[in-house]
Length: 439
Image (cartoon, rainbow, N blue to C red):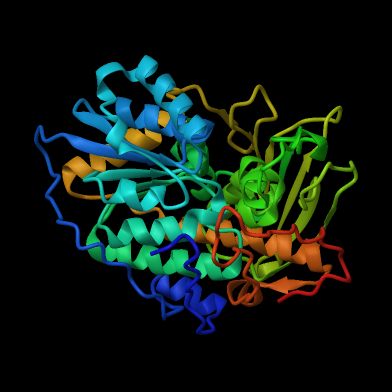
C-alpha cells in the first residue's frame, strides 16, 4: 500500500446505527490490507515484546519511552519517520532514557513516506502510531491488517472518510483480538476515573449541562514564509509545520481540545449528540496555514441536555482547561479547585488518592492486557470523541447546524491523493462560515 491510499467506506449510516453497532463495520467497503505476517501468541510469560515507533516527534518519543517502562521484557526494535533528523534525535533521546531496552540498529531506522510499512514488516509485536493525525486512518488500517497490537495517539482522523476507515479498523481489530489503546490520556487518570465513577453513579443527580474549556497558547506557531529554505517542497514544508494545516492536524479543536471533547463524551457515557452549532475563526493573523485559533461548540443531546466546548490558542490571554458538570443535585468540576476533581452538593467530595502519571498508566494497562490475553480495545469511544470534534469543526466552518448523521456521512476528503515529495500542494484557504459549504 502506498501512502496515498484513500479508500474509504461510502455506505450511509446514522446515529442509531452508530450506537447499535458500537463502531463495527457499519460503513462497509474498506479493503483489508494483508501483509501476510505471522501471528504470534503473546500471553503470559517472559517472551520479549518488540515495539515499533511510527512518528518520532515529541509525543511519539514520549509514548515510546512509556512503552519501554510498561513491561520488564519489552524492546524498541524499529523506528520510522518522514524525516531522518527527527528519527535520529528521537533515537538518541530514547537511548539516553531507556538504555539497552532500545535495540534499534541502522537497518531498522526507516525514513520516508513509506517508513510505516517498513516498521510494520520488521517483526514488531506492538506499534506506536504518533504521526500527524491525517495519516492515522491509513496507518491504523495497515497496522491492524498486519496483526499488530497498537497504541494510537489522538485524534483518529481529520475528516469523515478517514473516521469511517478507522471504524472499519476498530471492527477488524476486535475480530483479531488486537489491543488498541487510544491516546485520550484522561481516561487513564486515577483521579478522573474516580470522579466520573461518582458522578455517573448519581452523586450530583442527572446531568443537565456540561461546560468544558481548553484556553491556551499556540501549540506550534507557523514560521514566516521567509524562513523556508530553497528546495523545500510544499509537502516537506507542510509536514514540518503540520499543526497549521487542516488536512494534517484537523484544526485546533480536533487536535488538542479533543481531550476536553472526550471528557464530554465520557460524561455522556459515549452516546453521540444529536447535533451541534458552533462559531470559530482566526483573530490573530498567521504566517500561513489554514487553521482557526478559537472555537465555541454547542452540542445538543436528547432530553434537552447541552454540552458547551470553548477553546482558544492565543498568546497573552486567559488560560484554563476546566470542566464543569451541572446536575440536578450538585455541581462537579475538574481543574477549578486546585486542579483536582471536586464535587459540591448533597455529598461533597474531592479526590485525595494516588496520582500516577496517566501517560504511563495507558501503557502499563496496554501491555498488561496483551500479557493477560485479554487485550484492551478503546476503539468505539475513540471514534465517538474524534467525530464529535470533527462535527464541531464542520459546524464552525460552514456556519450551519450539523447533525450527527451528517457528520458521520460527510464526504469531504482532506487527505491529498498520490503524495510525493515533489508534488505541488497548495494550501486551501481558511474556511469562511456561511460561505464554506458542508460536504
